[in-house]
Amino acid sequence: GGGVGPAGTGVGGPAPDLSRLVPAIGPELGSLEADLVRRMHLREVLADPALAARLTPSMSLMEQLLRDKDNLSGVALANAKALIRRYVDEVTEVLRTQVEKSTVGELDRSVPPKRVFRNLDIDRTIWKNLTNWSPEEERLYVDRLYYRHTSRRTTPQRLVVVVDQSGSMVDSMVNCTILASIFAGLPKVDVHLVAYDTQALDLTPWAHDPFETLLRTKLGGGTDGTVAMALAQPKIAEPRNTVVVWISDFYEWRQQELFDSMAAVHRSGVKFIPVGSVTSSGRGSVNPWFRERFKDLGTPVISGHIKKLVHELKTFLT
Image (cartoon, rainbow, N blue to C red; front, side):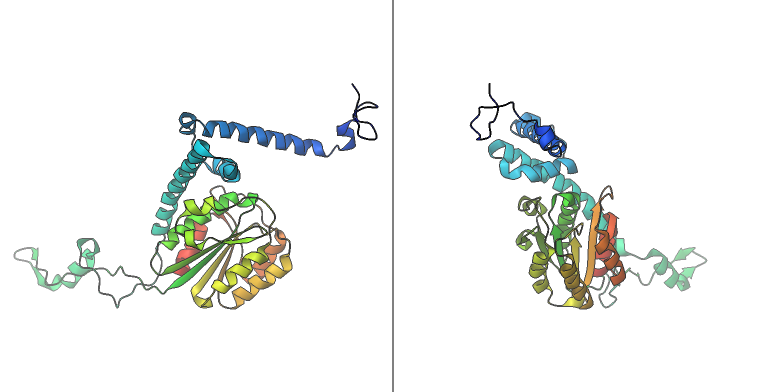
C-alpha cells in the first residue's frame, strides 16, 4: 500500500515518521487520549443509573462533570446534575457551619435582649441579687433577671464576587460560589456574582443557588479580567459599604490594565479581597507579578483554607 505522495494522492513513497516530524505533539496527544478515555468511561457510568448512584461526589469528579456537562443528555445529564447537587449540598452544609461559628460584629445595645432562657445571664443575675441573700434560709431571692444582648449592629452591605472560570480555578470557583450563596441568605447582604474567561457573565439572578450557578459556568478558555471589571464596577454604588472578592490565579492577558482598575477600586474605599487559591487542600499558584503588587497595595492575596475568606467576609459584612 502506498503512503502519502507529494500531491496528497495516497500513492508514492513510505509514510512519513510523524514522531520525527512533530516530536513535541506526542505527550499532548497522549494526555488528550487519556482524558478522552476517562470522559468516555464517565459518560458510560452516568448513562447507567445503578452505576451512577455508586459514584462518590468529590472535587475531581465535579471538575469532570462541569467540563463535560454540555456534551451530556438524557439520563446521563440527569445523573450528572444529581451528583453536582449532592456535592453542592454537602459543601454548603460545611461552609454554613463555618460562617455561623465565625461570629463577629459589634453588639447593638439599643436593641433590648430577648427574654428567653438561652439568653439568661446566670452570673450577672446572681451578682446583682446578692443583697437579697437570706443567711437564715440559705436562699437567694431574685428581684430581677438579667439577659445577654445577642443582637449585633449591622448596616446594609454589598458583596460582589468575581470568579475566574478557567480550568485551573475549579476548586476555588466551586467553594466560593457556594460561599456567596450562603452570604446571599444573610440579612442586609446584597450579593452580586460575575464569572469570566474572555467574556463576562452576570450570574447575580442565581447567586442564591450555587447549583444553578455552576450549571451556567463554562470551564476553560482564556482569561481577560478587564471584561469582568467592566461588568463588576457599575455594581459599586457605595464604595465604603462594598466588598469585592476577586477569585483568580491572575494569569491575565492585560495585566497592567486590570491591576490599575483594581487599585482604583481599592482606593475608592471598597474592601478589595484578591483570592488566589481557597480550597480544602490549599494548593494553587498565583501570578507572582500580581501577588507582589497586591502586597504593595495593602491587599495581600488570600490563599489556603477557605476559613480565611470566611473570617474576612464575616468581619466586613456583619
